[in-house]
Amino acid sequence: MPKLAVLSEIQRKSMQMFPCIEHDDTPWSPMAKPLSESKLALVTTAGLHLRTDEPFISDHRNGDTSFRVIPRSAGAADIIQSHTSLAFDHTGIYRDINVTFPIDRLPELVHQKKIGSLSDNYYSFMGALTDVTGIIEESGPEVARRLKEEGVEVVLLTPT
Amino acid sequence: MTTTGIVLIEEHAQRVKPPRMLAVPFFFGNALGEADNPEYQHRVLQATFDLLDRDQGPVLEQLPDDMVPDILMQGSETANESQEKGLNAADELTSLRAYYEQWVNAHAGRTAVGASTIPQRRFRGVVRFLEGYISGEESDMKERPQDSTVPQFVRHCVNDLKAFYYEARMAQRPDGADRDIHDWFWSKTAMGALVMALAQRMRDDEDAETKAVAYGIAR
Picture 1 (cartoon, rainbow over the protein chains, first blue to last red):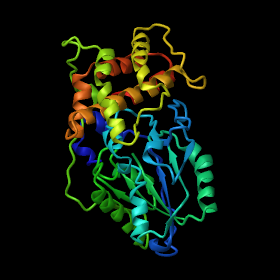
Picture 2 (tube, rainbow over the protein chains, first blue to last red):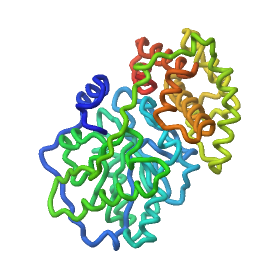
Picture 3 (tube, chains in turn blue, green):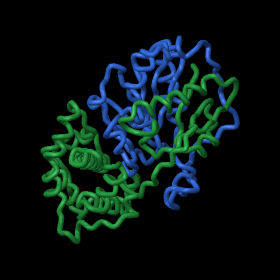
Picture 4 (cartoon, rainbow over the protein chains, first blue to last red):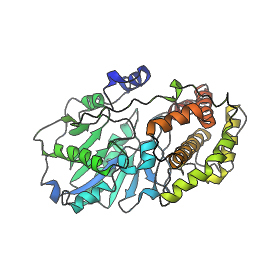
């Protein structure tokens, strides 16, 4: 986003008042080897999922903290978005899913030998959650377990 | 595992303190900068992967770019003129169908329509359902999935109708800027007026779930 100072008042207040979690410190995992030798996975909070999956829901109590698996083999035509917010401009995603979920860019980087390899599965969560407890306690650890099981070493996180 | 990522609201990353984040100046929905611009998307990805080389964190850096994006308006900031022109959403939708199908055919079947599971040829029925819902009738559709509440189903219907309109418009005006499509939907179309009326109807509802859905539909 541009700096909040240049946004309209309604947008600025919405961003400033958003109850995101605050931490005092940061977990740190240094790179074990170069990216060009690492297996990378893509994880997004764009509310994307396979067309055949259950859509994400707008849960007014805790938000939808579930996740969806998107196989790397899925093409853009297989993936849709059921993000809680329809108010932001989705035009870019309608045109090209890579603008938020770079499924075509990553294989190009493997081909260029900048990334070692890609995981077989990517993961998607709903963004704009006001309570992420369910992700911290349940769905987040489950996705981390699956990523480790698949030998993933680097995770790329994208929002929408 | 080592993580790196893109953040749209730098001020939020300052509070959360994730290990490595690249703050980008783009609006929601455009994390990698620009649709159909692989070269630019690769620049953003490279800047994100460059953060993996840092020795300690948290790392929060800005995309090295002088690009200043437009500021998009919210639906509530526009005046919709469709009512003055006597437009109605069902006929308008029908008039756009050929363009929508042109978009789908040109993109190997790819469409953002699908969350409601209603085929697009039944969308006039969806419009009638939503108009009834706005007017306070006991409105429902037999196609609503049993595990989806009416407010959630309304959200998925709006998701599909907006995607239908935007994709039709992109087929109709292939060189149209995103901002112009956004402006067209909210200020010119009867569907934009219907969605705003729908959001107001849901905001006024006493049910917390319905209010929550309203916030996502339009503001």
